[in-house]
Image (cartoon, rainbow over all chains, first blue to last red; front, side, top):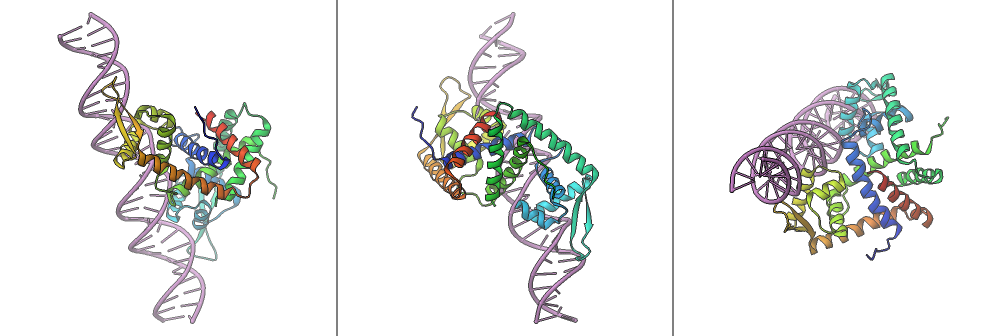
Length: 143
Length: 143
DNA sequence: ACTATATATTTGTATTATACAACTATGTAC
DNA sequence: GTACATAGTTGTATAATACAAATATATAGT
């Protein structure tokens, strides 16, 4: 078996594709917790970066405004967020997390965290730290 | 701003979710090359791990057999793979990549690779290598 | 050899996440 | 005040998926 030696970027490209596939499969079927992918990140964003409107969220996640509009409507309908009309602009409003929303987010975060921690149990602390760092760094460049 | 200090696994959990979101957005809209996510990985798998049937591919990717069945049918219809009936079993067959398929795969791989290389241009070689390594390692544990 | 069961694959149907386009309501500029 | 711009919603289409039903072939038990 003559394994071709890959340039790091080739490895990363392929492994990213594989990671996507796996992760997508997992989060589509056996979803961890009660929040789906979009709900989890929306709540996280609203919770940690303060309230914001549909447009800003759409930009943050690079999704269509209509998509975010539906997703936030769903969150609102479930009582996880509520809207505050923008006093300056009658068309706009901003979203804030409710107590229930914050609790849901926290418990989901915990469940996901534990799942990852379990997966990483055999990794050295250095590798865990480095992986976190590099992922963050990578996320900041793929705008 | 009192930033909470995160355990590495918490960072990784969150950054993975963000990565998914971004990557998904990118590969859904501005798709690189002519192959979609599933086609790219299917071709890669068939090309590098030899021919296999729908069932094996479904297991590999943890997707439903019906999903793979449609995806491979689409690949076949585009002339990227062809089927060989299994001589032992009249129900089964295996898939092999065609010349066109191999060419498509190679050019897509190249385009994706270049995109990643561009993104990583400011990273040190060590970080690139380490990131590739850790991604591979992580992929192997999220079965 | 016959019948029941298991297996590989396909096809039908529903769901979900998404984008784009059309629409509504409100704001801004000339 | 009229025209244009903007925030958000709703209608519609598409793609990827899962689950269930169907088809064809294989295997096991009698």
